[in-house]
Amino acid sequence: MAEKSANVSVQAASVLHESTLISSSSEQRTTHYASGIKLVLTTVGLGLTIFCIALDSTIIATAIPSITDDFSSINDIGWYGSAYFLTTCGFQLLFGKLYTFFSLKVVFVVALSLFEIGSAICGAAPTSTTFIIGRAIAGCGCAGLFSGALLIIADTVPLRSRPTYTGLLGSAYGIACIIGPLLGGVFTDKLSWRWCFWINLPVGVVTAVFIILCYRPATNAANVLPRGWKQAALQFDPLGTLAFLAMVVCLVLALQLGGTRYAWSNGRVVALLVVFAACLIAFVLLQARGGSGTTIPLQICTQRTVVASALFSFFVGGSFFIPVYFIPVWFQAVRGTSAFSSAIRIIPLLLSLIVMCILSGSLTTLFGYYTPLLWLSAVLLSIGAGLLSTWEVDSSRTVWIWYQILFGLVC
Image (tube, rainbow, N blue to C red):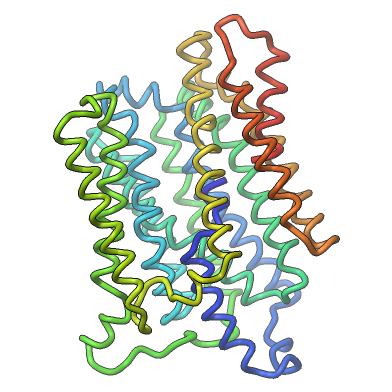
């Protein structure tokens, strides 16, 4: 899942943050772990956070046909999802830096505020362009929320308990994935698609209250910014950040326009791909120079576990969101179902996903190994995706239910 991703920025910030924590004696460190009602409410707050960002990712799936009808913007349908994930991806590394130098709580609340502002803009958007801008702002906040939730878990509970708590966050994601399309269908059919985004506002307020009141960082920022604004700014790798953002934007634009609005051989698409390649090379060279100001430290890039996890998350995340977005569209366009009915029909995929999220976290805690689960899921994911591609107009209920279950279990 997406936000399921174990991205490089999270790993980098985790390593730097953990290095400070480990410097203290283990006896002293254990006294900083949260417990009791504060731990419960902090976990609930983080769960609500993951719930919000997952809801925002999936609730729109069943509402897209109504949104395009309302705005008369069929050509923008791809942007309703792409704008959200574009900024989510583009600002991941920047938030990793922010979490490295500033308080986890402060940065997390700022990210939550951005997410709420974006949701409010989407709910009140008068035009398709405004809606896309709101999605982009919400995605920017999402970039800091998921990584922040993982870092707060690492700062709140001991290592042996983290797989369980991470599994709980994954289950919150899965629950939102199940409820999201259903709520989207209900809001679209009974009220308005705008409620798909206004619902984030009260949930976000409750989340902010729990985190602000109950979570207390075990340590201050892992690193201290140097004096002088120039030296401080260099710690955030402005050139690397710009190169990374430009790289992501050009790639998404090329994929969005190529084969739809323009042919792949069109000069606009080719130019975007060329600029993407140039920005990628520039980003790699900027990171290879080393130094404390690089976004991705070299010691992170040389860890095969981190690199393999990032690649695995990249491919699995891409595989996951395609069915989540387009299966409801398929049922509405091909089978002629309502928005709510299409949401009902995607439950097998999402329900199997949440079951496996809980089981995988528990199994990892029990056996202490996670790689066998990754190997198995990689193989079965390919099989499940291939089976989904065999759907026909007259495919039986058994086919589309069990194929979704297989895909959800391994995704």
